[in-house]
Image 1 (cartoon, rainbow, N blue to C red):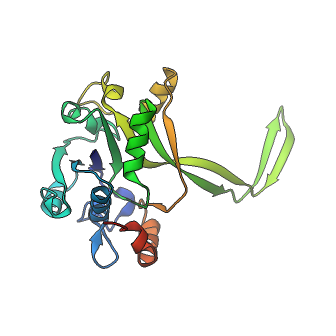
Image 2: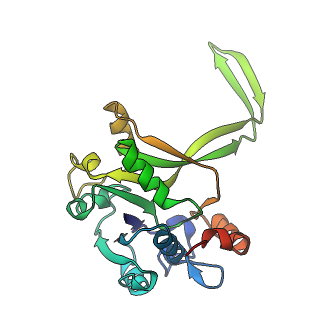
Length: 237
């Protein structure tokens, strides 16, 4: 069981915390970096090896993580000189990846069972499996629907329900075989290509704890909630 952790971004939205630290290494609670929590979870879920895709401040991640032996993992690295999007960093390393593998962002806190995502992806035959989460978006305005200059419906401050990507994917090597290494490839482009080819991705629906640490507010919330969720996040780790 192999995972690829995407840890090459600059974390611009999380500044000033990421001015001197790569985002996956910002501390949560009083002991752990986000990336350490993720690595502990992967090891507990049965993963034995991991590739960390690095870019911005990647040398700091290398120094912190090392070869992964402290967590019982074999860790190697893939460096990108220029931003390649979510899926682009996978293309140059494709030859050394197993047939099915997990891909995930290195800056999320969740009690998702990573092993189950990978197992269900491999069993599904789907080209891509996306872990999804239900989100409600509150609209602070009265929303109008118009046709030919007339208002035909109205809703006062509605809540919109969406399923969003959690930043965790089950992926198969063959899915990326037709793309060119070294060129950017985003998650959005890949999904649209699969839909256009009538080979839709599968959804892995999840309803547990999930927090994407993208902004200072998210980071503050993660630290405020970590003590409460520590047992769940580090269960078995």
